[in-house]
Amino acid sequence: MKLSIFSLAATVPVTFAFVPNSVVSNHVSTRGDILMAERTSDRRTFVSSSVAAGILGTFVIDSSYPLIARADGGAVDYTAVAADIAGLIKADPDKGPTLVRLAWHSSGTYDKMSKTGGSGLGTMRFKEEFSHGANAGLADTAIKWMEDIKSKYGDGLSYADLYTLAGAVAIKTLGGPQVAWGSGRKDSMDPADVTPDGRLPAADSGSAGADPTDASHLRTIFGRMGFNDQEIVALSGAHALGRCHTTASGYDGPWTPTPTLFNNAYFTLLTSVEWTPKKWEGPYQYEAANGSIMMLPTDIALVKDKKFAKYVKAYAKDEALFMKDFSAAFSKLLSLGTSGLTPVYA
Image: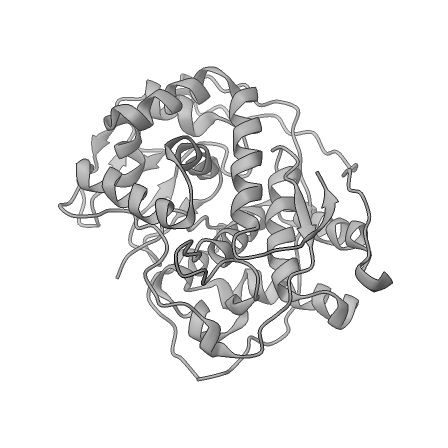
């Protein structure tokens, strides 16, 4: 079994689990309580020395969220939907990274050759998909959290639109850029539309530890979706958010000291910290000298591969460039497998 490198997790251990859940054919996740909301920050500058000092960013709540309202057939006010999602993250910012994971994994199954997978059909709600190794835990967390919002807006709001919008809103509310997003995805009613397990990128490939096979693996997985090297590195910056848990994935720790703040810290840390293999009984991972943060083999592969490394260095030096490139790449990711979407915000 493999852990997706984009399994962004909240502080709830199960959200990063990669052991498949038991499967009941054709069963859809049930409705559950929602406790989420919004946090933003004007402070994005990150100094690598803050890792050793244990300094975290200062956060400023911002209640505004610029969206251009569109209503397909007059049925859904997407500005209101986004506001509900953002309002939920305010109550618990740690849930924001899990919503990014939901959107990411709902979209990252796309195959540009067969034209299968992607975000268009909302199949993540089927057990046949959320029981995939990289998705374990989503049914009990992010999917469940979205049910009350889905119920509030009814059939006019598709799961496919809801899951992807949740990721875009989470990025924005955690201090990141606005991500262009459009509505109009239509949910599948057939679990047969679920793509095979194994389409998401893994934390390690080949021999244990970072090596050329990890870079090759990333290019294979992302290339299947239609992404180039620059976009692969930009999307990897989402690891500024979330953490791993030994009780779920086997890996342990956050990538940055500010796991609920979207910034370029992932890249500044990759280029400025001396990463050494962690000495423990768990899977192969890297850690900083003080053990407070970690990197996975596929993270370290980005600085070992010369073609990837030039983008890592560029984003470490220029956060505005990273924000711009991430916004474009994440918007592209969220639209994989769709056509004719109605622009909601750009």
